[in-house]
Length: 383
Image (cartoon, rainbow, N blue to C red; front, side):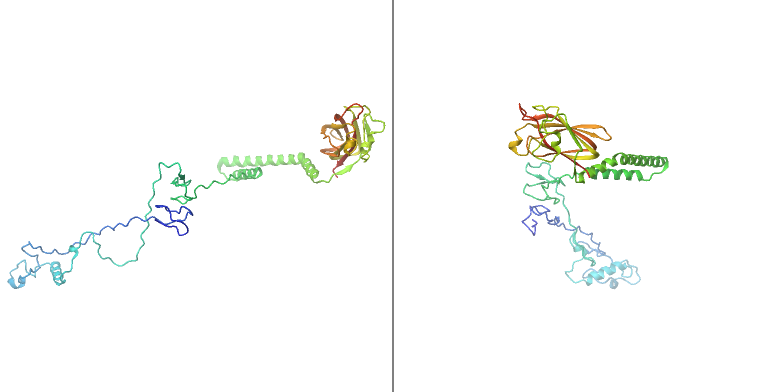
């Protein structure tokens, strides 16, 4: 069993460590003896004990030399002069070999002969593929890379070493402007891609027409929306300045509470209509000397900022704001106020304002003997 050098022993048969995922080594196949090389056939055959006659050119033990028994010039086939040189050489070699020395024919089958020296080569590792589990247990952790079942205590796959149980990272959703830019870039690449033939001519003409249409639309947008965009930016970054009306009039007013009291800058004076009660339909109108861009409007409801004095009279709950401009006529908006003392600010952006009217629609604390009071109204313009 392979052991990881950095942590605990590995699982039997595993290629990667179960804890740290380290590679443990290749699985080696069992040593198999190399195939036997065919032996070189012997040049001569040793005579057996049953053979009566020795081969040509071989002198049997105890026999006289053929040359001494044969008559010269008789042409006997056993004569040394007529024997083959190969047989004579083999017989001489075997006779000269010391006793007990084995020959090629005496070696057992499958033995390896001596070879010439050469550079040693390392045996290539044999990788044995472990078959995948077809029926995995309910507690097995399936590798997301190779689909191999692993025991639940493993942290890395025993086959490929992939981390087990690693959750996929969250899908990154790019902002809309990045997605739009990538889409436009891909479209531009498609448009400028060169093409040949008749389709290439049509593509070039269509591209030119599309570019011309885009430029025309861009110019129209700049002309029509350029001023609005500029005004929106300036409205955000400008520091509003107060502006005062040149004249103030009201639909009606109580004896000691005139319409001019809403712009006198005093916190202990207020405007109140003549009729007693909720004051529905009563209004106060302010006129300005020159057109200005209205940014903010501040209303001080009630008699005063002190809580005890604030509750003595009725307070406006809803005011209708009507604005007249020098170019676009008039427009109406609704202001909803809270029943609390102190200033209440409203963001109302209107350009070229020349006249403003505030009409009472609803009131808090209206009752017999009470009038709806407005302490102060402030206007702020863009410098």
